[in-house]
Length: 204
Image (cartoon, rainbow, N blue to C red):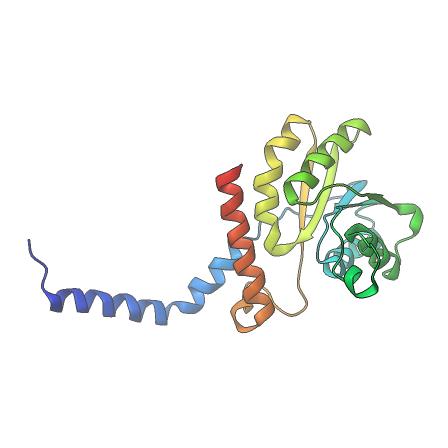
């Protein structure tokens, strides 16, 4: 059956109008899909994954002061971008630790484990750390848009290690799933996370 040019035009126009009418619903759900968190529980150990130290440390400090966690592990071995400005080597977990202390978390409650240059490497490290230190529950704190990729990456690894994971996402001060497309930072964050998530699906 031959479809006329007029019919194709009507279909394309209908699709375009649908995208315009439902654009906010679509955009909100594009970002909402990336967020996958758990109800907050009381767990002794938490880990703040490297990257976006301010937001993630702020979330960890909030949970610490509320009594949900007692000890915080900072992971990662990437150099923080400020290293090039100061002409010295400063790894990301040290920035996270400094932010935690700024938010009132005592040094005695913080441990740096400077290993891992990717989410996968940090998750592998954490599973081994939990087994070595007889930890059977761990809260992982990362950026909200990062949580689905962390869940995908960590689920089987921690199940094999017999460790229960509670995943928490730190909100960004300037954007969230409801307005990310209105700000450059939100556009970059959502776009980058989707690319990384699809890459992880392909690789792992």
